Length: 259
Image (cartoon, rainbow, N blue to C red):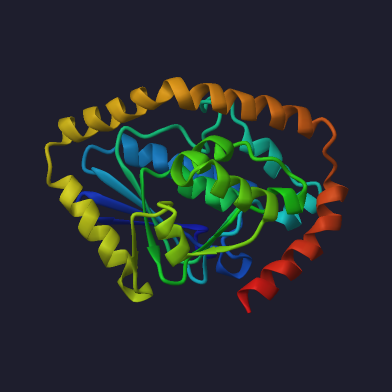
């Protein structure tokens, strides 16, 4: 029986979801996107779960959309948008906190997944990059709103327009992540934080989280709509062949930067 592409583990009130396509650097194909959304919804509906941790099987957190599937005309792009999910979100927002435990590279769509988490903790091996401009695909999961909100407009534009990697220490200085820990201590650090949150009054935690989100809506929602309109317009001229042509160059640059 093949191993699951998304591992699910329950530790008391904490549910851990782990991307498990390590040979593909946990790239998002259609099946993984569907599975992630279903498991997050299941965790949100489970009264025994108070906090979710999202992480990846080494060596990467998530390398973004599966360029091989895109290049072969796969339907990953169709999975990016889902009419049942609010514009600019990779999944239906949970009523419970999601902690991103970033164990390795979080690239493009993977960076967008990280940004959709409520709190980020990084391993010393974590690296972040927005390579949308290199691939020739535009963001659709809120990057142009959430990234500048996290790190500031100038640093966000530098990341997006250059496509260069940012290491864990630089991400901490830029306030993209809240903490950097040794790689082997990452999951324990995320669990410790999750258990602290789970030990608080849960109606209070969820109401406070919802209040944070409502307070941000007047800034976030218009920006998400702009990104969605831009992305939709861009997709009208999108061809899988263009992504296939760019794929080798992106992979080559990524290997050079990881060397």
